[in-house]
Amino acid sequence: MTKTLRILITAGPTIEPIDPVRFISNRSTGLMGYELARLAKKRRYKVILISGPTNIRPPKGVEFLPIETAGQMYKEVRQNIGKADILVMASAVSDFRPLSFSKNKIKKTRKDFTLKLIRNRDILKSVSNIGRKNKILVGFSLETKDVLKNAADKLRDKNLDLIVANKVSRYIIPFGKGDKTVYLLDNHGRQNKLYKWPKTRIASAILDTIEDLCYTPN
Image (cartoon, rainbow, N blue to C red):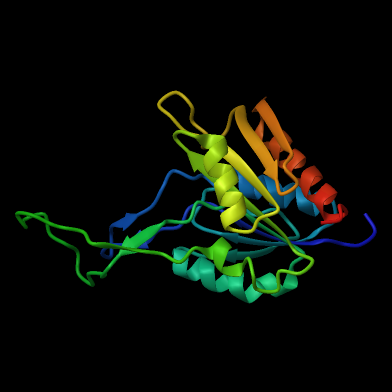
């Protein structure tokens, strides 16, 4: 590469508090984002890693910014996007959060409890037109059906350069360790299926594709 690339990576889940002991979250382990950060650092990128709660130790030599909520991740991404040539949103950001937070624990003695949710801001879409020039934007898509169609729609809607598409079902678990199958779709119409690869190898292929996009004319 002709210059040191600066990459901003988000990883892990976000959590949305209901009361002091309960929250909404998802099954993301953060492994993919951390593998991307580790390999990017090994390739001599300057790496900023914004992560929700995980059980993974951050790679040495990266700038690590821990967060919990989608709102906190939104703030950190917006504050750091200007430092980056590449944004990879590998995190599983909660789409919704509780409308209100109870300062006291909600007791189970209540007969019924209705939880009202509101939409969180779409972080990736919000930054797609801010300082967009000369930046590579990468998103992830997790679907139960129409995986490629939904991923392609998201690629266009969010003005991305690359999207990594996963499927989840009763028998296909994309979370955590083990061999996984993903699709890489880029904004030049190219598609690459990675069939039953370990996440380290998938992360390497994603970085290879990003580097190709960095030096491919639009």
